[in-house]
Length: 54
Image (tube, rainbow, N blue to C red):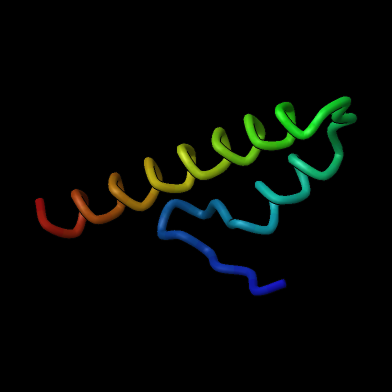
């Protein structure tokens, strides 16, 4: 897995480990977890980009 560190110190590997550590009972729960992870990552990227511009 490729680890990418963001300017605020967070990383994608930590997010993936968080998803993997959960006990999912259905594919719907897996998809919801992945959506949450993507939403958080996009939020971090957008905040970092705004800090660079501002």
